[in-house]
Image 1 (spheres, rainbow over the protein chains, first blue to last red):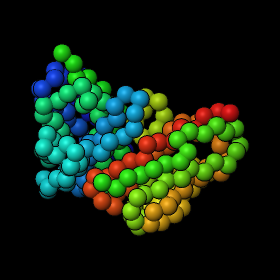
Image 2: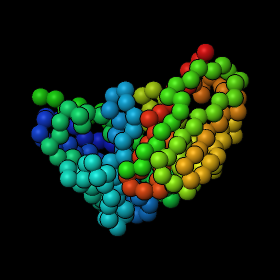
Image 3: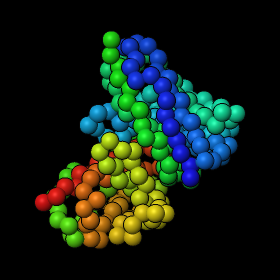
Length: 116
Length: 107
């Protein structure tokens, strides 16, 4: 059974950089697309982007200037970096797997609060 | 971006009712449409992909239909565990946008 687990700081100061890691267990990261999705408290879901095992990536144009994703095959992990954060970036961040366009396995989510 | 609009935004129903949620795209997306169920404090769970294919492990009372711009999620007989929020998502074009959600609560 594939499992995903997000990790990283739960509090980030405004203007600083948010960095999260998703660890995949029960399956290899060397296939499929691997994604990040976020959900502000009490609101809907926003797609951030995905990275392929080859390292190629695609980001939401609304965040593209601030987002970078990377993948570490040796650790079966992929990561999200979001620069210059503001309070609007406060959200639960989910990592997910998406084979063939459907997001079938998700992490439990990690709440990241942007505050001084 | 492709805009996904769900209706209604919320509905009240009873156990055993048949419920239908609609999702409309503002441009054609073929059948690149997924449905998710999200319970409070939990990650979304994939129910339906490619508009009408039931994800493994999802109950058969859930079904999806539609193509191009108009899609529906139906629940044939609501169970107590179905009272929660549902989202549609298109994966035809980047970014993979979601609908705003439909909350199903108990009448």
